[in-house]
Image (cartoon, rainbow, N blue to C red; front, side, top):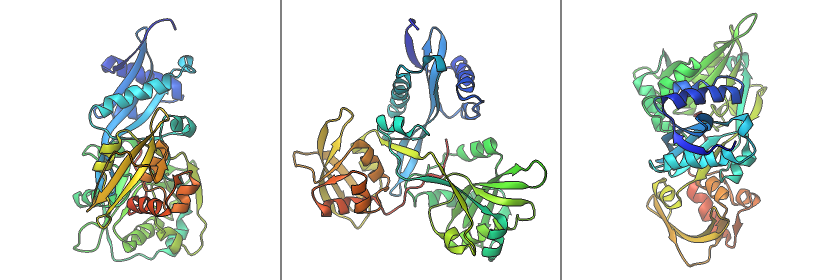
Length: 389
């Protein structure tokens, strides 16, 4: 390993090398390296003409407070087994972020099982992530069919509905035009649109099937977007009508929105839930991330806060919110609330739903009122990221 290590944006030859490296490092082919070739940024580390590390990055918007915020979404990163142990992964992450921040990213999201490693680099999980499974016959018994028409396929109205509903949560991707085709091709999805007769689309369901070895199948839900409780119930009833072929309905990790329609509707609560590694958020550019985010229109406040920086020092800021907009600027005033950079990310995503939850996460505050105001400022919408990358 005496040869010099260099970082670069991958050309066609390096893309192919990275595809081979990822297969060796993960133990199986990574389909997204092919599927995202036209849309992703691939940064690699090269030693002696050989790719030894790398990872994909997507520059997309994520909704926070109802507004789109440019995000560096990182995925499919790896280091060659023979190169591990020398902090190459951290250097590789810095290179991947540099490329995307130069193009405008002010926040970054990753999904990883190595949460401790990600925390050391500044990411934190705003919320836990679950996959849920329920018996199909339980849905059939619990949710009566309502007056909704079901159309096979993804309609323009359903895509517009998804975009509208995504704004009502903190975290969903503002899906670019190519996103849906990528999802469908990668997972062989079947889509259904729901609407009352003569009305606009009110629900979108996308699912895949897993065939059982001897008989039948399981349904795996990837998208579940409903404009109201009644259409959500109708979508669950539709899934229940698959009971003759599918024993179970699996809601893929994060696919089911965090509202209680399923909990409140089941006649017998016999669901199973499996915890998955969470999505994690990092703030790359504090002033721009604050400026671009959406804020409550009825909140007017100015709160001095202190934020830990990447070197472990603390800087003082004044956060001002008014008429649905906010700005943050350096100040000399002592902060009433202190955030580590990881706590800042959770607060930004609305992950602290109350002042007790913030304090139990280690957020320090000299003023209960200031902490309560900050919590309120980001909890209009709940954190939820149903998109995978």
